[in-house]
Image 1 (tube, rainbow, N blue to C red):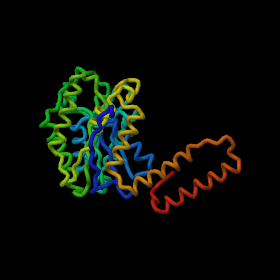
Image 2: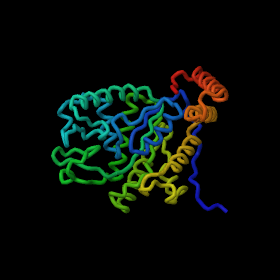
Image 3: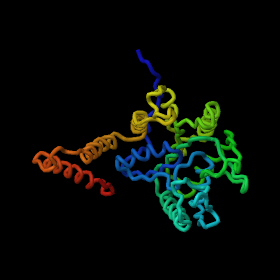
Image 4: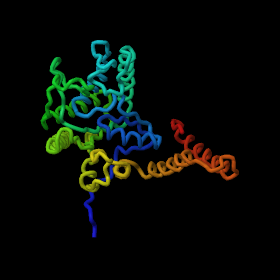
Length: 316
């Protein structure tokens, strides 16, 4: 007897991810989880140059500025609590020095523009349809940076607004890289600060917007991270202590589903080899000077050499 339901996912036979792929990850904190996995397994990837972005409008604004090669100035930043912030970026980019922040924003813009032009796959993870509009400028922000809430209006993007925003994102990306594959997914992280019902409403708007836009013939796909968490892993043992974020077991499971869907058999075999090396690097011997450990290190170096000949971009 099967005590759980499985989300059916068809394996991609075209546009697969391999070690020649260049991947860009944008979006909510769940994109960081997948991005960390790609980094661990030595893929050519970068994640969230502007930090975590939770909603479609924030990602649309970022892509618009990057494609238009915007140059950030002091007019785009503000000071609060002895640090300088930008409403278009996550607080991870904030700095105590305003010049450093402006420089970081411009460097991130330039590098991201170059990367978008050459990337093979862009994975966009959407977290919420709830947004905050800064009253003073009437602009939807990516991050409030702990500015008093009374200075914002809280709104939810309609399904039409989500679809329009995602369509703009795809159009902008395709204008400079028409061959890239775009993979949308919805974060399984529950935004319960918005409310239980409000979180479900938000996720439904994101899902509807994505599925209206999804078009495999245009290389626009959807991966069901949210559905896997809600249906296959519908138990609090798969959450962290906050009962909101997926724990390591859940992340590993969703990652395995992603690899089964998007990776070729050859790529999966390479993953196993890299896992062996990574575990070897992490191994801490009882006696580092023993003959056995020296032989172990020699074999480890041999495994690295074999992989580096095939994939010289890897660094261990």
